[in-house]
Image 1 (cartoon, rainbow, N blue to C red):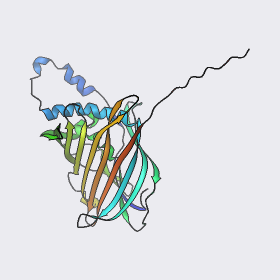
Image 2: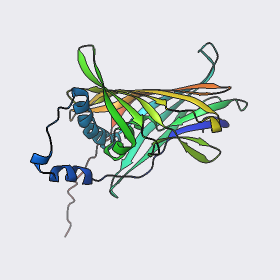
Image 3: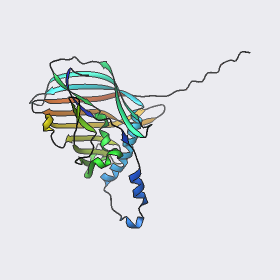
Image 4: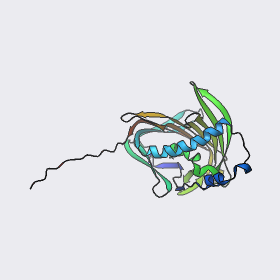
Length: 277
């Protein structure tokens, strides 16, 4: 794909069945048996974020963008001593027609990287969909707790920490020699309090996968509002993803930047045909 020798780190785009059974059970409980509990602002924001995440996957199918990918080998001084650059037309395709959420990344090469066949590079796929962590279908896979609030440029953000529950399914995996190794993740989510939109998601590997040589993984994904005109719409889309992966002998850093978002528009053309008699 990007290089001849590669290590692949990816989010697993598996089918996720969306059900509302848990919500129905809560609604069925008598009010007298459910004690009133106060919910912290960050956890209220998390509830709103779950709805915006579902909307994100619906909207993502309607847009394409330019993806610039930098694959770097990082030295002991923390600086890149080798890098390759690629450019793609990128689209995240989401399909729920079967009642399950199915995700597929589409990349058409616009500018291929110079390939050094002697280099081992990291391939990182699917990190724009790290929001699966907050998707209702993964609610039982992570423990969430409030982590305070933060104001940036006058905008108030709720911070929520998450941690993988041992034995639960994970959307992230290391793909090595044809096998997938699930990665337990923990980290922090920054949520815009009013809208429930995710502004930033930082995730770290909870424990090392030393048996396959993976010592550390850190990712930071940023999201922002993208405005479209005629008609006026605002989508909350990924703008960057930085992924660092370390083994005993190697440190890779991949940077994905997403720009130039364009929205698909469906048009119907009606022609009046003259009937000859």
